[in-house]
Image (cartoon, rainbow, N blue to C red; front, side):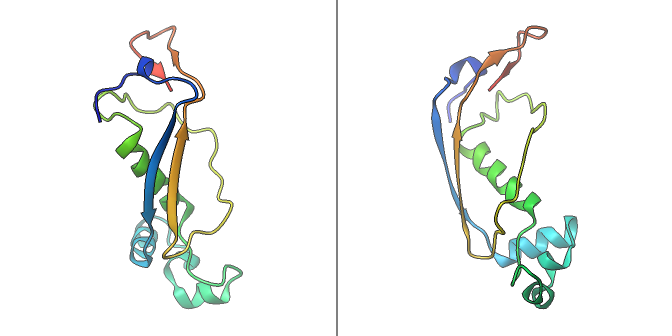
Length: 121
């Protein structure tokens, strides 16, 4: 990816972020360390739960999308970090073998009034 700064992004631009097939090993490894709820780490429990099987932590799902964003949308050399995230919802369980696909659309670009060396996309 070539260097991109906030002013290089345009509202309406769409970025295909690619895809990632999630594995059972990823789900369990992440959950054991960060989100050890039984529906993420225990196949037998998960099978008996209302989920009907092992599911990914929503946090892992979000982080996998972020990894896709770092590959094809966020310029790592010019990024100054993020001021936060407004909303993340887990609408459907993500299961081993599912393919996650990402797409980002630029809705707004603005330069900070108090710190003009910073922009927001």
